[in-house]
Image 1: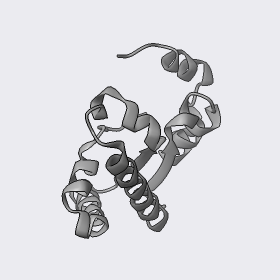
Image 2: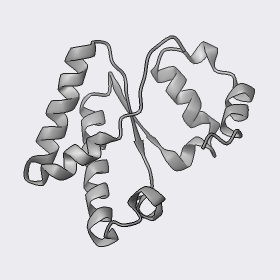
Image 3: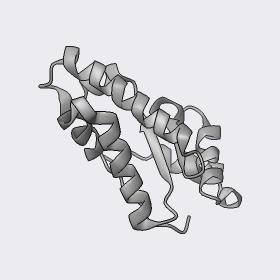
Length: 130
């Protein structure tokens, strides 16, 4: 794939800091990123909120607060993606390793479906990275 990309996890922190205006702040920030970079493609990666709350990163967080916040965040990302489907898509973390079609759909979304190689993708997914 001939593109630049990065994983941005701070959207959630931005969302949490502005709870009274969280959806509007998130949408404004994503709109800004779209204008700044032009021709962007946002891949909204969702994961089971309970699984997130049990990860080491969130171990000290109160799950009774965290899980509802994650659900609201996922809803906001999904709504934004649906309103901007020309440059946004949503993928569930749980589908990535279990469903090769979800990876193929990402290639299609990025306009690179002809470069999709299931064997290569499987090899990457089977490699421990952290």
